[in-house]
Image 1 (spheres, rainbow, N blue to C red):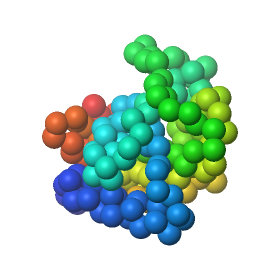
Image 2: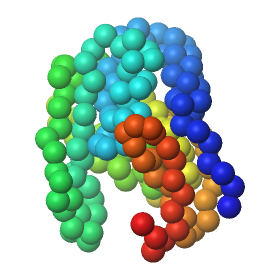
Image 3: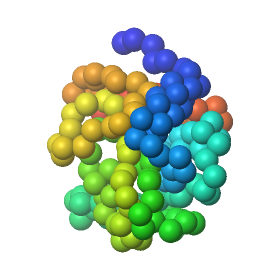
Length: 170
């Protein structure tokens, strides 16, 4: 099993990649939204690195998941906080790990309940493959292939570190 990279250099690479994508697309005032919990940790650091003007948005997508009837509701549901107008804004949706795409789909549904953004870009710390929906990141800190029984998660918030977990382990 290989060692996972440190998170700070991945975040630096993400910030540089995001600056490039934003500049290429002519986006000068992006609004960042992080998905609870790890996505918020990543979004906080990107928000600071980019010097974003708008306050950071936070999503808890528990009510928007398409699998809560199968896996149950998350007992720690928190309210989402979008402290800016969404209509006609350029949104950067941030998550820690992109896997099937279902979390991102749920986040998009919730964002559209707040309004109609001009565009939504996706930035993820880790793209681990295995998509079930046609969702791809615009920026990824790390692309990683895992075994079918492996998962990766972001532990934190201080320090942030990636942890590889086999099915059935913590």
